[in-house]
Image 1 (tube, rainbow, N blue to C red):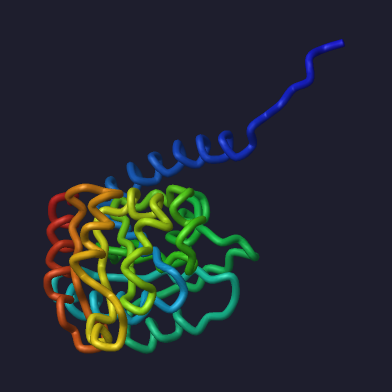
Image 2 (image 1 turned 30 degrees about the vertical axis):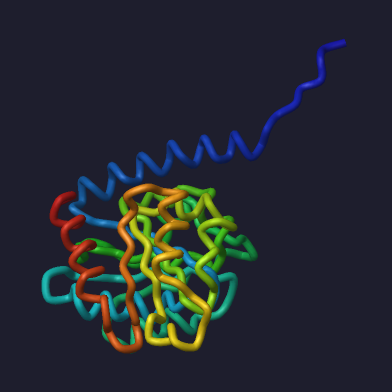
Length: 221
């Protein structure tokens, strides 16, 4: 009798996806297209922050947005009403996007006339960090009401980030949140990771975060 075969499906799936993600990065590089993956928990202000960044970046780059949700098209409609190309991606109950889903979304959005595409990933601090989307820049949004201890509780997503935007700084007086403590907790997970305190509502800090993204796009293209 042959030995029983045991296959680690998660490891196999992740390895296959990693290879596909690297291939996708090569494809977007060849198209002079930057692809930014934005991750956060629900309610952190992803859509509002992306809109603020779009307004700051539109003078230099042609931008579009892919909105990923289990259901609804509320966020994609908000982006489109603001004047930017958008497409809604329904994940069919899955709590993340992978590289192949990204490729399908980019094709549906149409990237021929775009320089920069934002992905608003599914609101979750766990699953989206496990699957490489093929993006060339990963941003994490942490909002003040969530607490400054989140980098300690959800280490993977912060270790995968290229920068963290601490949103809702305008609400700081109402919460027991220390920006310095938050920075220190992030440093424990990812030393040297850029941290941008922002308020998507008031616009504070958005120019600095947009400048970081713009420098990345210029450097890649």
